[in-house]
Image (cartoon, rainbow over all chains, first blue to last red; front, side, top):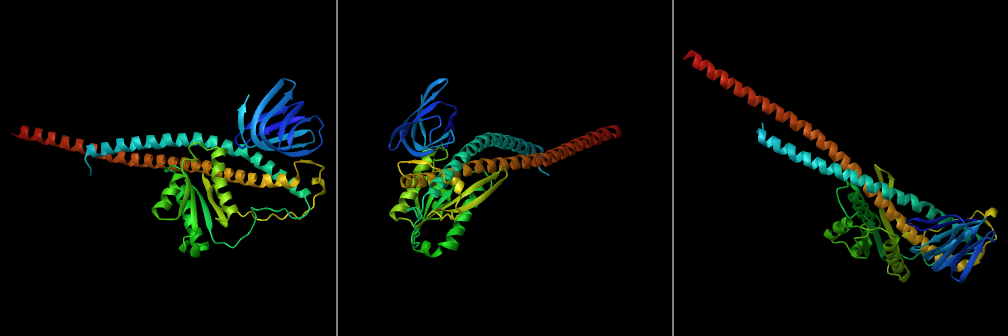
Length: 83
Length: 295
């Protein structure tokens, strides 16, 4: 599935991934391939991105995520650190 | 005719002014590129955000309670004025200030007399302008453009939103320059709050996807609306920033051309007086030689 992490200032991540773990407002959850369409608000926390190349972490300061037809778009309010 | 030395001095001063305006033009061009990139960056973001918002609100039946859309009797007005921090950019700032003065005069003349129109200036030039004219100024965000990012824009937007929520202001207007292209800026006067009601009568079945909503639709909407307001405000700041650099670039390019024109005329004057001096000298020598031969 395809993941995009964007903030108002820049594009933080874009690419093919196998799974992404998100800090949802009502609890952390993971989105895998062919997940059902979901819209959720996010709170401050870590996004863990699993791809063929390995695992990446991005810390965001809240935002919202939409998953539709194997395309995940994370609209983050800000990027706190890029590890 | 001015003396040779005077003209020479003027030529050198115009040349150095021209160098400055030329350099400023280059700097503005470089900054404009950066500012333009940022606008291009935020456009998909705000598009996706509003698409999301309409996606969510499309699935909700009935009215959503929205504290930012509440229409009240207008007693207190806040006008947010977005100008630049620096001058030398043509009529950029003057246009915004003029639009604000006109807005107050046409729409809020009565309230202004009672001192109920408040101004919030983003950018130093607008602040100076209204301070000199004794307008009712609130918090200023003068240094915002030095390092423009979402965090600092958010502070200003939240100030207005909190004021509206608490009833300190009943209407918040936003006046800024929109970036159309490098040479054109459009002064925009928009109502920031309350949000104008969007008519979404059309029932699009294809939109009615079976989304999972977390936590709930209502809570997502409650989060999204203020967030999209902040993004909207930030976007107008970015527009204004790009428009500023565009305006400065055009103004400086114009100034460089004018200096070129002035230099041309000065050089003509200089050569003419030089020629006149030489002719005079030759006449004197010839005259002197003739006087000697005759004597």
